[in-house]
Amino acid sequence: MGLIFYLISALAVGGALAAMLLKNLVHCALALTLSFLGIAFLFLRLDAEFVGFAQILVYVGAVAILVVFAILLTRASELPRDGVFSKTWLVGLAIAAAVFAVLAWAVLRAGPWLPNEAAAPQVTVNEIGQALMGRYVLPLEIVAALLTAALLGAVIVAMHEKMRTK
Image (tube, rainbow, N blue to C red):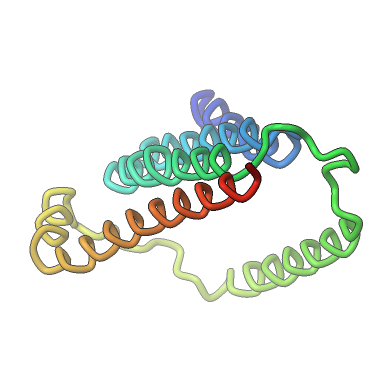
């Protein structure tokens, strides 16, 4: 493992930690975008070009921008006065630890039965693109329409809330 892997991993984990620990919601969304970018770089480093570029286009280019716009349209930029942590954070921490324990148990238990080496599929990015523009063009268009409808719905809800407060 090289230095580049550790730098990219630090970018992804640092962005995720910043998204979790920062108090300003807009800064959290931008840190989440940084974490998405680090994950995309990890995919590119693993020679999974299609998944890496799809991560950049979908998550960094669309989802993160949609989250930032939704935050800016629907919320005030001021911090809450009673703190940013919920009163039931201890319950959330216990549930997260339980989920982590179950997942770790499942991964450790499945280890001996997994094959040591799997054959890599011989699918190129061109073949994936041909499939998306051929057989799967209808589901791709439905997802695009759904994301557009979600963005329009967020704008309409934000406009109605702004009109009620005036």
